[in-house]
Structures are given as structure tokens and as C-alpha cells.
Picture 1 (tube, rainbow, N blue to C red):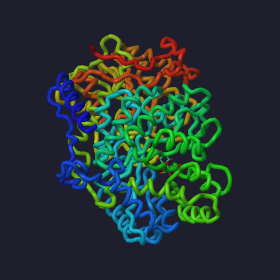
Picture 2 (cartoon, helix red, strand yellow):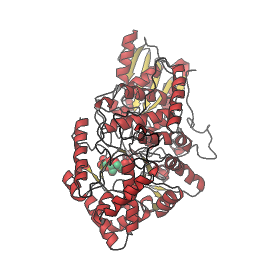
Picture 3 (cartoon, helix red, strand yellow):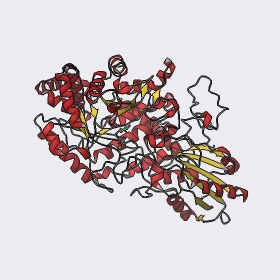
Picture 4 (cartoon, protein in one colour):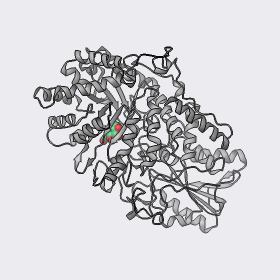
Length: 628
Ligand code: BGC
Ligand code: BGC
């Protein structure tokens, strides 16, 4: 696989250099000084199966030996994941807890948290785990879903919807690897990513976390998204298994009705890719399939995923998700563990959960064999990823928002933009043009980045410490080329209107009003659209840019624009990347990975349907213009 990736990167480098002069491909080779225990860093031409790579005999034996020494209490503790805000290092040491997470925005310090603060926190928990009687290193998990987005000053990459539009496997690999490095500057080695949701209904607040409505895009990106992390021994999580993107009406955590094999295939396809790629962990979906909560489904978790598909890693439950199962807390624990969940994400109730696992085994409600299977899987992944050899592995700060990572993110923005309209050669813009740039998305890196940025629900703060807004980037280009920014329609030749959604995540983004002025859309869009109409009436060149987590209904507003660009949630390098393409240094490349509906009634009508009619919708799946 390594070779293939190398070949791919050479191939991309060659094709890239054809269109862009001086681009250096990102170097993804392993630095053996930083990763002495990595399997590629051994002098031995035929090294022993190391760190359970491929789960070789040596590792299996070591894990079995360790497992045999553990008490039931210690095993139960390995199956627990607690939230950092509700557990102390002292408690980790008392019980020998298996894992800790930071939920969205759960920083070690209030706001501009530093890598040293993160590492000190990590180190204290890890040392406590090693000091516990069992002495087993813990795993620390985080949602680094578009870069290490909880960390102040990290490179924020476009959210997955933009990467689906770019649909570039090498780019995907490089972004995962860059994210892994920006995680490792804090010591953290487990990422709850990638989301493999095959989103059928864009009213869902998690639409932007998915690559596409059509698994053909997942087919291209899934393995690379996983390998980019795991080649650096950062644990990936395929989530949320399965059908999270198929709920009726696009309701977060809702029910997916899967009456036919076709429908199952759409949502299952990426997991087949993920298991083949050797993904370490899989997170179960809050949602139900045909009325059964996934967290309680032995059929889907054990029979299909573990037995039929041969998944050898471990299963993690979602945040508090088992609390949605029937019965009392012990019933919920029994149901989920017997269904095949190996580790419980119990942010707050972890202590009780741990005790109830023990009681359920003592009460013969869970076989100890099931517990052994769960702990074995967890220990094997800990081995495989080098935790027993180097639990304090850390990369130095030079990787945080490095020039390479910022350049990669900027390239990802260029490739993810989709040109929807371009009448009268509205684009590209002249660098010496006189431009009025306005709208709520024009000068806000927080909006550009969307949910899961700094905080769970994202931030309206325009300053993320790094990156540039569209205004910053336009100012720079125009200043260098004799162009000007002005503040009125009358004074401008070109009017650029940047519309935005405000940040949201999960159910907070579920919404039945997908217009440019309702639901999660920024209230300032209405005034900006009025100015677009005035500019058009005055005969100006009117350019629209939409910063959003999904297609929004453009309605008649579209008539007021000469050109219109879907920019998705491009992240910290959004400004620079958008300017690169709008001023014509790069061509458009992205195509829609989602159908763009013309009316709300069309929401849910996707390219997976046999009767899909491209003519019915505003823009079909796969659509995207270029300059050429
Ligand atoms: C989300 C997961 C996430 C977890 C931990 C849940 O609410 O559904 O995607 O990994 O929280 O933050
Ligand atoms: C956490 C998220 C989590 C969510 C679930 C939030 O408080 O920060 O990580 O996904 O709760 O409701």
C-alpha cells in the first residue's frame, strides 16, 4: 500500500506541475527520528510482526498473556471511555481506565489552549494509567474532523462536503496525514474520523460531515482518509455505523428505513472499504435501522460487521448513546455489550458504567468471554499503534500550522470550490478591478470553518489565530496589482456578495428552511441579497459566493448574480484559496457531490435513485463549470 501511495503521489505531482508552476508535493515519508518504533523504521529486513501489525503471533501472545492477568474490574475499566472534564488522573490511576476523550471544544484551558497544555494534560492521564495496577496505557480520543479543530492555531481544512466535491484521493490522504501530525503535537493518537455518512437528506445538520450523497465518492476517498492517519499510527474511526445519513426526513439520530438491499448497499458500502483498509475502530450510530437502535443490534454489529465482514478492531459507542436503549442503565449496558460494543463512550457516567459491567458479568447477563473479546480487541489496537512501546510519543510544534499544512489546506480549498454559474465571463476577476466585497461571510474565518471548530458548535469569532478571510485575501491581491476595494455599489465595477450559514453541528443544524434567508442562514444574507439586486440593476458584474455546510435553495435570488460559487466550509485557508481561483490563478476543479435541489420538495431526491432526472433539479450530482 505504501508503494501505491508513493506512486500516486508522484503521479499527482506530475499532473499537478502541469497546471501549477511551483508546487511541492507534501512529503509523507516517516521520520524515523520522530517515530523510532514505526514498522517502516526497522533495520531488520524481515522484522518480527511488530506492535500487532497485521496482528501477528508475537503480539497476540503478548496480549493474551496480559489479558490473563487482569481481574474482571480491570477488564471493565479497559472498556470505559470518560470525558476529560469528569475524570481526574487520580481516578484513572485508581481504576486503570482504558480511554479518555475530549468532546467538541473540551480544551484543557479556556480558549487559546496551547500544545504544551494539551500535552501536559495528556501526559498526566497517561502516566496515571501506567501507574495503575494493570499498567496499561490509555487511548486519548478526539474529533479532529477537519484538522485538529479543538486546538487553537491548528490548520483547519475544508469540511468533508468540500473534500467530496474535490474528490481527490491523494489530497484526502495528505489531509489525514497532516491532521494526524497536528494531533501528535499534543500527544493524542485517536481520531473519531472519518465520518462515512452517505447523506441522503441535506436538511440533516451533519450533511457537511459527509463526503457525498453517493457512495461512489466514498469509494474513492474512504481508504485514503483512513490510511493517512493510520500510516502515522494515529487510530482512525469509521463513523457512524451505519445508516446515519439515511434517516427519514434527515432527522439527526433518527430512523433509517432500509427496505431493500439497494438502500442497505448505499450505506454499507463505505464500511466495506473501511474494513478492507484495516480501520482500527468503528463508532456506532445513534440512529436506528428499521426501528432498531444500532447500539443494541447484535445482528448489524456482531453478525454482519465482525463475523461476516471480518472487522478485527474494536467498536466504540457514541456519546451517551446507549442511554437511548430500552430499560435501566444496566439493561442498556448488557444490551449494547452483548450486541458487540467493545468500549463505552460514557462521558459522565463512566464510573457507574464500569461497576455495572462487573455486576452484569457476575449476574450472568454478559459472558466473561464477551468481555475478553472486547478487551482483547482494545489491547490489540493499543499494541498495534505502539502505545506499549512509546506512550508519550509527541511531534514537535513545527508541525502545527506548518507551511506545508497551510499550503495543503489552500490547495484543498481551490479544488473543492464548485462554479455553478458564470455568465458574461463574470469570472475570473481582474486583479486591478474595483470591487465592492460585502456580506456576512466576507470577513469571518469562524464562519468559513463551520461547526466542530474550536467548540462543538463552532465559533462566530472571526479570529482563529491563523488563516485569512476572503476580505484579507482580496485586499492583498488587489493591493499588489493596482486594484481597489470600495464601499458602495456605485463606485464598484464588480460586486462580490458572500452569503453564509452560521456555524452549527449535529441536530442544531437540522432545519426545514433551507433558503438563503431562513434556518441556519445568517440574518445578514437578506440585506446582502438586496444589494446584489441593486448592483445587477445598476449593470455591475455581480459575483455570489456561498459559505455553507450544504446546498441552499437559491430561488429567484440567482437571477441577480452573473456568477455563483459554492465554497462549502473551506476553513482557515478559505480566503486565500478562494482568491486564487476567483482571480484566475487556478481553474475550478470541484463538482457537486450532492444534488442541488431547486425546491424544498426535491430535498431527499438523490443521484442514487434509478429514476434520477438531472433536468428536474437546480444542479445535478457531478455538476460543476470550469473556465476552460
Ligand atoms: C458525535 C460523534 C462524536 C462524539 C464525541 C457525538 O455526539 O455524534 O460524532 O465523535 O460525539 O465528540
Ligand atoms: C460534546 C460533543 C458531543 C455532544 C453530544 C457536546 O457537549 O462537546 O463532543 O458530541 O455534546 O451531545
